[in-house]
Length: 144
Image (cartoon, rainbow, N blue to C red; front, top):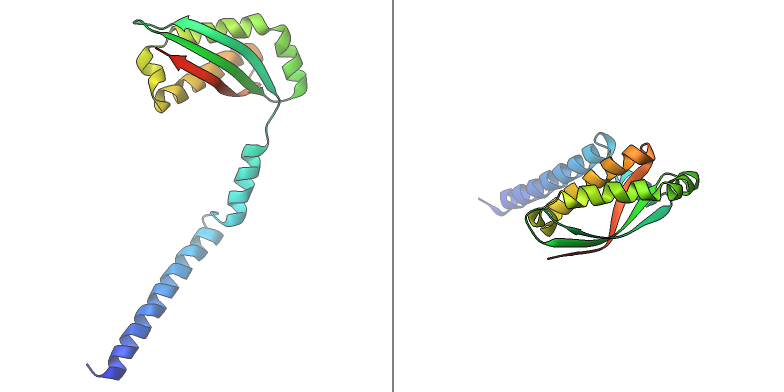
């Protein structure tokens, strides 16, 4: 190959890589909605939270041996719901104790198990809260 051909091949390679990268970014931004703006909107959506309602600290015997001590707070949709749920505190604590006591040590030792526990708690607490509990927060979680 002569020098002109080599320069032409290298230039074509750079242009091809540039067009490929630009095309990929363009498709993601305009057609798939993964632009920086949508990422920022998603972060704003996550940060938009309702009031937090402390439920309390729980110590339960786990299935198959062991124990779990957890301090739990729930996130609810609005302040009015939080006030209503304060009056139904005993029902919420009963649901939490029921869910926790039906778990094994293996269920709470890894992050997948804890996420499943979080989902189970949200589901059971919403039986009392009429679907106004949006998240469960573990302020502390000790197991043995």
